[in-house]
Image 1 (cartoon, rainbow, N blue to C red):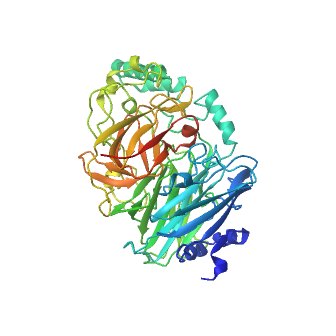
Image 2 (cartoon, one colour):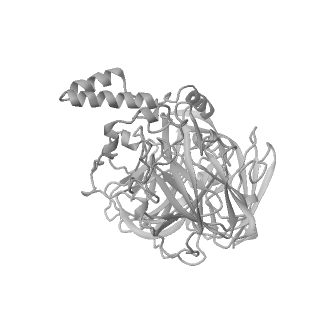
Image 3 (cartoon, rainbow, N blue to C red):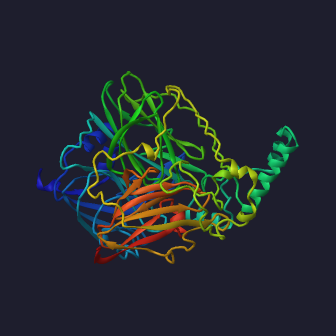
Length: 563
């Protein structure tokens, strides 16, 4: 490769190149330069979504920013210049690197001042699909995010004829700082589906007898005491949902020839949105989670929380278009793209599923916490934990007989091209493709509790907001079991910087290796961590407003070798 190509400056011409799906595929399959130098500029830009243009922030004028493609074992140098009017940063999400290169202002470095350039240098020690984004303020939500692909040093055995990066994101049509102020005034500001007095009387009229009417009344009183609403699934509605920066009308398209194996590298770069992803008419084989190879598992649908990546293989045989459909968890909208043999083709867009509704069984109650290792509603009750009283006002008085009935069965929603029953991916389906390097049993256990108040809209760890949240103190070289207990009514995708979390299944076996795990309401997720990196690392919720209002702590590694 000519020396001139070893320094890569992404320009407007490169942005135009990425606009072509075939060009993106060619780029993704190109061999990277070893010892490459990258020049990235954080600068103002404009986003057009839903027919409206809004000011935004960008990397080199692009949203998402430029794809970076590295190779395992490569030494990379990245010059990041801040052309904004505020401090900025770049965090390399899921990348194992020295702590001072991690890009967390106030923790691993001072941030990048306006007009200044910070140089990141590190050796690439892994392979897979990852991403990078700002870790300053709400800049990630304003457009500073982009994908990374790292090719393995030796073939990983995942065969594909083509591959595409699919970056899912959300775009708020108002300033995110104003949205956060609105939530502080009223946590239900964006809950457009909250129950009304009219709904209450309608429920009473539908009740078949006096006992059922009494149950309706008890239910409303319980939610009222908790100052919560069962329709409050996400903090903010009103987003536009994008695929590679394109809204559904723009219909980003990836081309294929019938019979080809296509690798889709999904990144959820959203600030506030969980996505349920499916491609009606096609099965998806999950081959990688958070950049780590897993034993292939065939599914019809998978959920992506903020910060996660999934690689899937699809093999369309027919000469037709297929819709890539990613609906928001609260069913307020969807991101859409197309897989097609030719440009200009489209397939039917499926209807949104019914909006999920929380039940009282989802709420954290004394005596209602799931056992270690429980995922997605699995596990058995264990003795009651300490419940943070500040978390949900009136919780202790809100208990009703209905809460002891357990969770209702979930309905299956079938769509054209889906079989019955439809298979949705769970963490329990994920198993590492190869044994972890460290299989030692943990020598001790630490617990963190996810806490907060929807009423006052703040989020915390062990009842304390960052930077006052108590750190997890560990020793270099040890293997420690981390239990993440969710004492709130919301799902929280927890992201650990600098190290891996090896999920522990309910039967005690090891599941997938991840850097981001979702912990549902009233659930506990357990993971084993090999403490193989020194200094202090961030550990936080990847819902941007949750981290911004306090749901963050640190993993502090003592510079001594474990016994």
